[in-house]
Length: 381
Image (cartoon, rainbow, N blue to C red):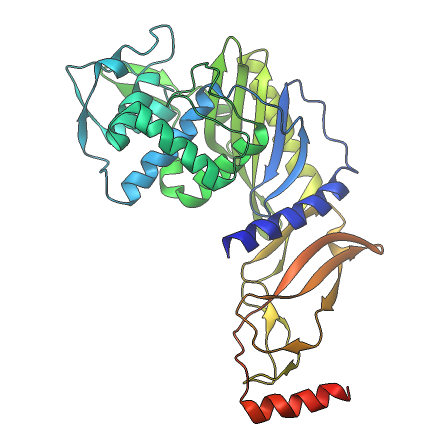
């Protein structure tokens, strides 16, 4: 089922993204960038999406994700206090820190705030050790999770993202990670929207300046090293007609904090102003009920296993027309969610999206007599 969902997303993405390119994106002063519609899972525009880049502190998003997973599975508790190792304390002193030391016992909740708001590299190591025992063991988990998510061009070498030959990613992969955090752990994602955090009498502001400039932005994370430049993954949620839309922008390798903020805002505004996200079909909605041969039932409802959204340039939605192609004749047995056809959404006679159509119910084979009777009927059909 997960493979089907991934295939569906790629099918819609590849075709309607081609249509989206008819709208030229704004000039973005960044090494690599991408804009994703979270609801439809479509890339609206990108530049060098598969270019290998340094994620810097964007690596901390994966550190947070694995911590959220441990919390959900009850392996950790937000109020649980953990010790601070010398390794966590002595992480690069010139880098961003939340300023913990081995004399302290620090709660997981405080460490998460130190990680995502203050971008503390010491917090990253402390969380890694809390989840997996050692940072090295945690890094193995990071890479296994990246593989599970389909982040094919990503490798993590540490929990914090400080530069190393074994730490790299792409904006395409980072968009997958960002979407997973928002979709899988919305209750913890809220931490990203907090503008400042005080720990041990030291207050630090969230480095995501869009939180002050755009009230629709609610996350996610900044990154910066001398070699990587200034980067930002930002997400904003705005009302678009009857549908609430969320966009995720990834901007990598700009020249300053101001520039990453400006270019991210530009990209988000372009996406909201020029596109609509439209719900085509609901999960389990039958678009047809075709005949089934040799089955325990004479028909089967066909449709989709999930809500289907597409993102299109403004003014295109009302022009879309569905064209269904079925794999007739449909002969039992038919497994639930087996592909039985393709629905093409056409605009001005051209395909905008192709959607795999599924059997919504299982249809078993009929008895011997029923199969024989339908075999004769098919012979003369």
